[in-house]
Amino acid sequence: MVPIDTATTNTQLTAALAAKDSSTRLKAALAIGTDPDPALLDALMARCAVEPDFYVRDMLTWALTRLPPDLTVPRLLAEVESPVSQARSQALHTLSKIGDVRAWPAMTPELLRDPDDEVARAAWRTAVAVVPEGEEPGLAETLASQLGRGGRDVQLSLSRSLIALGEPVEPVLKRAEESGDPVVAAHAKATERLLADPDAAFELDIKEAKRVYALGPEG
Image (cartoon, rainbow, N blue to C red; front, side, top):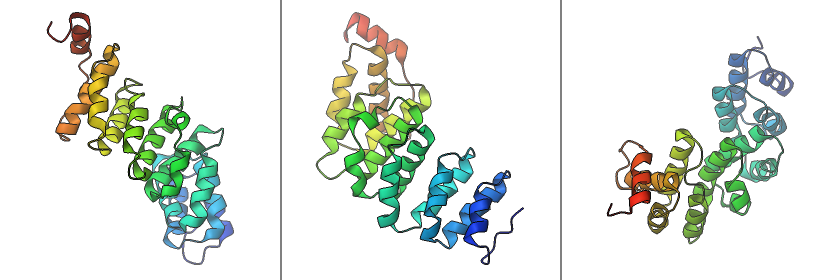
């Protein structure tokens, strides 16, 4: 196991990031973040794309946030265009933590609708974190186009992102509740309940949505 201390060289830290033992990789990422050195930016970025352990990935993100944004943000934005899904999702996750408005132009409708669920979820969080004032209604419309997507975890992530936009999302949810797709309508209703009561349970009443769709709201 590579010892992690203040005397550890960048070469040793880079090697430790690729160690077989996840605790060694975690300690390496912690050491880099504790004493951040821009010279290790490449090593952190490379590891983010392949790191299998959730906790190590989170520490890598923290280490990246400790570096100057003028260095990290351009690199992260370039990584958003990577063909590797994990590279994209981790770059987006880190951008959401930094919250730099320079990331906003990259939050395209195509990215927010990325076919990979983890990439899309990270993009939703990032877009909400960096949306400029006045752009919230348009973002709400784009995010609402994904209502009904995926399983419970994906849908809950989307709901939380929509709720974070506040008032601009209310008319968007109202329209979605009248959708001809009962799954979309149910997701919109569940999101509206969370908007009114953030402590409420996230429940998709698909049966009720289908009944309303079949019989009409007075049925």
